[in-house]
Length: 163
Image 1 (cartoon, rainbow, N blue to C red):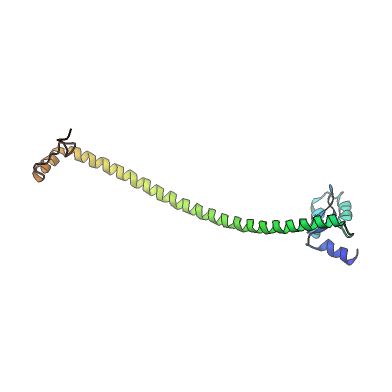
Image 2: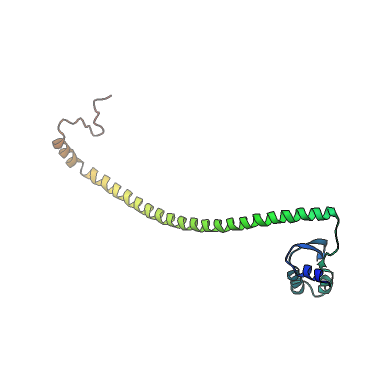
């Protein structure tokens, strides 16, 4: 194996390779050593010698059309890598926001529970007040007559003269 081929077979720079997968003749590869390790560790022992022998970098020149298509592929891959990095950053931010949302929701649930308890206590106190008012109606009306002489209150409204 010449130095150029050795460099291509160990590089992480995307390049073309033969038989990266058993069912694809030529495709892009960016981790030759990782692929070889994967073949040795995860592929059946009976397949390993053939896979390792045939898996290698493409050395010869390709047509201008393929070179142009590969350049476009490299450009698209670079854009994809950039978009993926942004997506990953955004995903991290989303996870932080979700955690903050979870904390806020927990605080809101706690406050809601306290509010519901206070509302129940208020309703109970209002019911007790209404009961006490009904029980003291005569006393209240007598006090009202003393403190508010000439009041048109009829038990329902101060506008008792309206029809």
